Image (cartoon, rainbow over all chains, first blue to last red; front, side, top):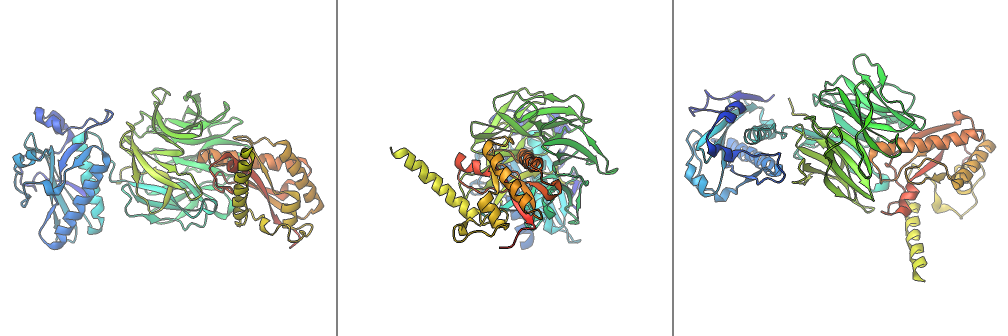
Length: 446
Length: 164
C-alpha cells in the first residue's frame, strides 16, 4: 500500500533530520519557534508556507496541487497551523533540490515552509517527496517520501500532514484516519440510518449498509478493518461485526435478549457490550476466539456504554445503580467497581482516551447536553462544548481531538458531526453529505 | 385569560403531528379514519381505537402510572376476549437522553409493560417485546408536550386479529 521511505540518500540535502530524537536535540533557539505546545489552552497557530508540490508532467503537476491542498486543509483544521495564502509568496519554488531563500519567507512571516514534488514512477506508482524547513533556523527539519498507487493520493497527503504535525508538535498526528458513523436520512419520525465510513476530513464517503435496518453505535477494531455495531436486522436488536474489506457481517454471540453498546478491547480480542435481561442491562465481555462470554457487572440497574482503557486493564462505563446515570470504572475482570463522576447532572457515554489520561463523556442537566473530559479518577472535569444536545464523544488516536454529534432542534432538525480540541478550542463542523451521528474515530491506518 | 387558549393551540398542533406520524408503518394506529365507521370487534383498529394501544411514562421512569395500568388492564381484557391474538410491546424513550441508555431504558419500559400484561393472566408466549430507545419518536416538537408522547410503550397486534 503506502510506503514511507527514509530519504536521506535519495534527497539532495546533506543533512536530513527526520527523527523526533534529533529534532529534540537541536539546540538552536530559533528552532523553538517551530514548536507548538498543544498542551496549552489556546495556541497561536504556526504560520506555514505551502507552495504547490512541483511536477514535471501536467499529471504530476495536478497531483502536486491536489496533495498540497489536502495538506493545507488538514493543517488549517487542526487549529495549530495557519497556512499562508499562496499569492503572498515572494520566492517561486521551481527546483525541489535547492535551498529556499529564507529571507523571502521571513518577509511574509512564515515560520515553516513545506516544499515538495510529485513523480509518476515507471512502475505506475506515485511518489511524493517533501521537505519541512525551519525559516528562522534556516535549515531542513524533515525530509520524507511516500510512494503509493495514484488513487491513494489523498492518503499520501494525510501521511505528509501527519509527519509535519509530528515534527512541529512532538505528538503523533491523526490525519491518516477514518471515521465510521451513522448517516441519517428522512424526517425525524421516519429516519433511516446507514452505516457509513469516510476519511477524517469528510472525503471518500462509503455507505456500508442500505438503510433498511436500523443501525447504531459503530466502533472500530484496533486494526481499523472491522467494525462492531448494533443492528435491528430481522427485528432482533443485536451486536454485529462487519468486515470493511470483505463486506461480511456476523452476529457477535447469540443471546436470549437484546445485545447493544459494543466496543472492542485494545487488543481486538474482546467485544465488551451490554446484554439486556428483563429491565436490567449488564456488561459482558465476549472473547472472539473462544466465543465465551464473561459477565462483568451484576446490579439491578442499567450498566452500559463500556470502554476499555488503552492498556486493556480497566473499563469505564455508565450505570444508574445510584439513581441516575453516572460514570464508573472497574477492572477488566469486573472487580473494583467505583463511581468516578460526582458533579451536578447525569454523566454518560464515557470513552477512554487512547493516551489513557482522560475520559470523555456526555453530561446532561437542565435541558442541556455537554461534552466534557475528566481524569480517570474523576478529577479535573472540564466541559468542552455545551448546548441543546451534544452527545457521543470519540477520540482522535493521538488523544488531542474529540469528535461528537450535535442534534439541532425542530421537526426538520438532525445531527451533525463536530470536532473540538481537548482544550475546548477549535470547534469545527465535520463535513458529511447529510445528517450524521454516532461517530467513531479509527486508529492511525496501517 | 388568553393563556389557556394559547396552551390548547399548542397541544392541538402537537396532536396534529401525532396524527401524521401515526400513519407510519410501525405504530399503525390509523387514527385518521377514526369516527368514520365503528371498528370491527377483535380487529387491530378495534384494539387501537377502543382499547388504547399505548401508555406513557414519566421522565426516566418505567413505573406504570394509574392511567397506564388502566390501559393495560383493558388491553389484557381484550387479549383474553380474542385469545388467538399475539402482540409485540415496543418500548420507547424520548430524545432527551443518550443513545445507549435510552435503548436500555426503553427495554425496561417494554419489560414493565409486558410483565403487567402477564400478571393480568396473558400467556407470556403471546407477548414479545422490542426496545427502540429514542429512535422512533412520534411527536416532533421540542417540548415536554411531545417528549411525553415519545416516552411510551406501544402494544402492536402482530397476529390473530379479526381483519378489517
